[in-house]
Amino acid sequence: MVHSTKEEKMIYITYVIIDPRDATPVYVGQSNSYEIRKTQHIEVAMGKGPSICGVNIRTYLVDLYNIGYLPKFKIVEKCESEEESLKSETEYIKKLIHNGFPVLNGWKEHKKMCFERFGRSYKNYFIERLSAKNLNDLKVISTKSNPIIFFSIGAKIHKIPISKSKKNIIDKKIRAARKKHPRAYEPYTSEEDSLLCQAYEEIKDISELAELFQRQPSALFSRLKKKGLMKTSEIQK
Image (tube, rainbow, N blue to C red; front, side, top):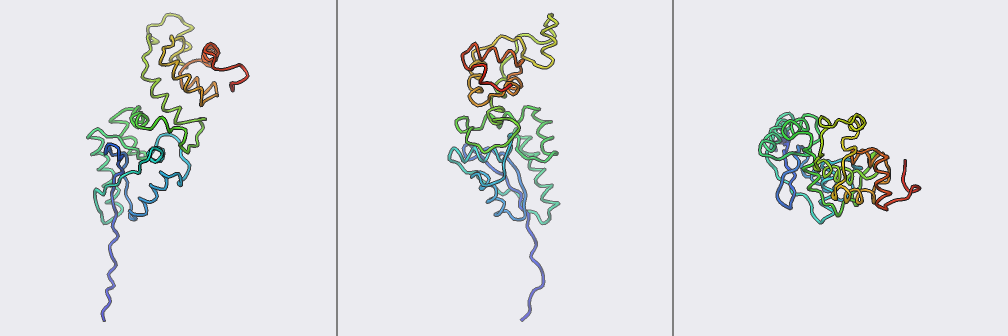
């Protein structure tokens, strides 16, 4: 009996993770152990993976699972070497970006591609797709006390227009304040008040609230007291 000594070629798979709610692609990956990699992604979604922070594919998968969904996977190419597979991954990301879909890939090169096509706010696209009612269920570790609430509300704050830009302000005190706090001395809108109430339920750190609302800490402190949301002893300075 003649035994073949020829080794089987290792196959590298380029795949896409798809949001099952509307078939939106959110991530492109590659692996020579596709089934194992799929299992790892699903385990992350179920909260069995490593700790997460910020807005990334892990955050997104956990959020999907929390509302009853598991991601879908699609194989887009098979390659015979890791080099070819990495190139395939990048080329498919380029294709998605060209078609108007940012991705949650973490490589610097891939994030740069998204930034160049969609600008700094491209992560807001994913923030808006997260399920608001389940934000507190996400297993997140970050320097922020509640990063998903922080990023979610922050995206909405940035959409509220500022009535006067720094260039149109004569008052030196206001101009100086807005160098660090872009919304300093800006009248509060009903939407901003509503967001402040929502944020204060989760975030008690005044410096974090000031960063989030782009206002001076003393101004937010006064606003919270005026709205009857807090007592002086309740807030972390």
